[in-house]
Image (cartoon, rainbow, N blue to C red):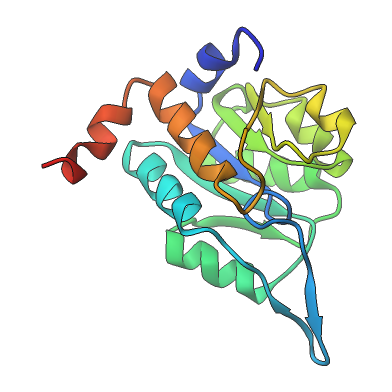
Amino acid sequence: MRDDAVARAAAVRLMIFDVDGILTDGSLHYGPAGEVIKTFNVLDGHGIKLLQQSGVATAIISARKSEIVARRAADLGIRHVHQGVHDKRVAFEQLLAETGTAADDCGFVGDDVIDLPILMRVKFAASVPNAHPEVKSRVHYVTAAGGGRGAARELCDFILRAQGSYDAAIAPYLE
């Protein structure tokens, strides 16, 4: 973790997630009809919900297109979903325009070199332990948990703590 990671996370108003390798473990399961399974972590999902409830908007930008991702995003209330975008810069610019958000108000978590154009523009860049070395060397925060194994939850909790809203986010569960 870089020294300025907490301050950078405190500035996040829109957190953007890659899918494969971040919200999933990166495995692709194919059957005779094509892609049939993606596995998501419930802790990650709840972390995203807590982030949203604290006022941080969420979005997905993924190079792959999957109905499974669209369903998961709908389940989590993620309104901004850009899939099947191989030049993620284009989707990022569209997202900024859609939301009226500046790059300095965004965080992004990705794991491969295709994610670098966004990771290098946002205020808070994060990744996972098994990310490509070029990515890990350029981000502000690398999670301890792996993609699809609690990384998104860890990241959401980190942002909530940096913004001073973690205690309020979990308070309803402590009563």
